[in-house]
Image (cartoon, one colour):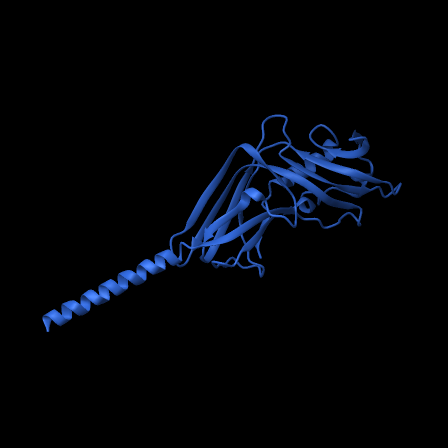
Length: 233
C-alpha cells in the first residue's frame, strides 16, 4: 500500500511539474506587436485648419504590461542619438516592431520622452490653414523645442484596458498625439492675422517660440496635457 501510494504521488508530481513547465513555456511564446505613430487629423476652425504630417524625436520607449497568466512584461528601448518617428496612420515604426509574450494583459502602459539638444525641434506638426478673410490657403508649421514625457494607458478597440495577445495573431497598436486639442484655444482671428514667414519658398504660418508667440504660448500650455492615446486593434 505504501509503495503504491509513493508511486502514485511521484506520478502526480512529475505530471504536475511537466504541466507547469508547459504553461511557463506557453506564456513565453511571442506575439508580433507593431506600433504606429500618428496624430489627430480632425479638421477644425470651421473647416479651415487641418493637420497633414509631422514627426517627433524620441529618446526612449517603454512598455509595461501587467499580465494575468504569468509574470509582468517590462522593457525599455533607448535611443541615445534620438529616434525620428514620422506620423503615419498606415505604416508601423520599424524600430517599434516587438515580440511580446502572449497572454491577457489587464493593463499596458506605454511611455516615451521627446529628445533633442538646444536648437532641435522635438515635435514638428505640418498642415494648412485657409484665411477666412482672403480665402488663401497657407502652409502651417508648428515647431516645439522642449523635452516632454508621455505615459499612456493603452486601450482596446472597445475602449477597455484588457488586451489579449495571442501567438500567431499579429497585432498593431497606434500611438496618437493630439494637435487638435493643443490648438483648441487658438482662434480664427489669431490664425487670420498670423505673421507669415517664407519656408521652402512658400509664405507659411510658422509657429514657434520666436514667431507667432501668442499662438505658440497657448499651444505650449496644452501640449504637456496627457491626451495622447494608444489603441490596440
